[in-house]
Image (cartoon, rainbow, N blue to C red; front, side, top):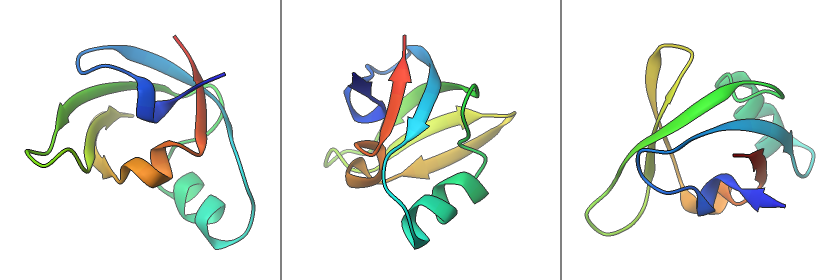
Length: 74
């Protein structure tokens, strides 16, 4: 399965599931990254981390380690 970390800049995807449990999963879901949500990767920081996303009408930055825990469909 593809993760959010693997999505190219400018591509949109849909969240399939968040891997894991505990505080990290709660934090990711609290940011609005829930199953079925459409996300577009809009930019990448100059040093490669974090990713900048557009989700639910706002911009969000997510570290690549966290993005690797989010499975998506393209």
